[in-house]
Image 1 (tube, one colour):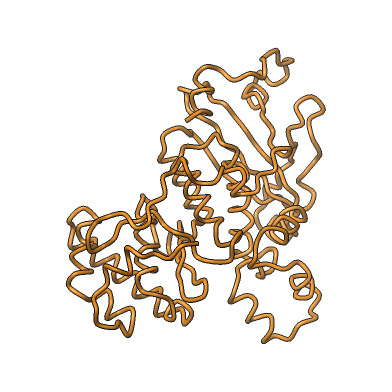
Image 2: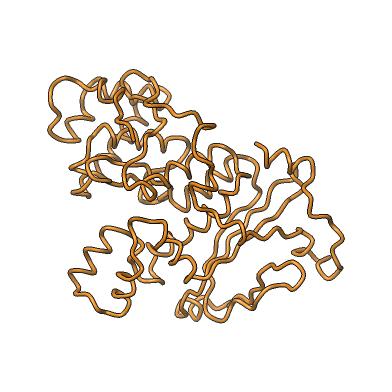
Length: 335
């Protein structure tokens, strides 16, 4: 990928010895304030958050400060960087930092687009998956109601779905992947994960120090029932669900940029504002981005288009609905 020349050219001539000294410069503060709508208070909160996440990550401390700011500004499309919400994060790739959207971030972008009335992802525990409907191929589940019992059971898969709003006739789509399938997908497409190494962790074939090092480098290496690993699995499911070309461009763009480091092993070029000049940095038009289904390695064979009637009291009646999309749905798909 090409270097971020515009951003580099905008930096002060004097060398920057730390991220704190970089973001404390008057020009950077003024630029960030402009980019967040002129609110000095919001800019100060954003700078404090950036300082906090960098202080906790030795690897980020070795990254180009400009790439950190660029990544954070890209996330300011309506996402929250705070640890409390975890909608996106800034991760190191060598000496460059990269924007990385989280499962909650994909969910929030979808809801805020105004086209989805609901979108969610659930882990599926042992015994809950009961096969597929013979007519629709929709997965069938029997959810365990007792959370204390459920939490003790191993996770065997993940179920994700979305429903469009009334303007699109409440169109519903869902996918179900086993945990094993998600691991195979991660092993094939993510440079941050190796299945053989993960199996060694699960089989206690690595030392505690080796496991800790792997887990600090990638959330994929957390144990299957631990929250960091669960978040990565849910993110994978959201990307599959939203990457078939039907999602709004803002979501497809976020997925494409998020997928770039996994695909290329380096930080992506971000279409983020230069905090000093306000100009776009190496701006890449959305239409020229890789096809979203290609970027997220979408497995179209796993998508299940299910008529909403199958999930309503009328579900007992045979469905006569055609599988072709309504005009409103066609408008959404072609967005």
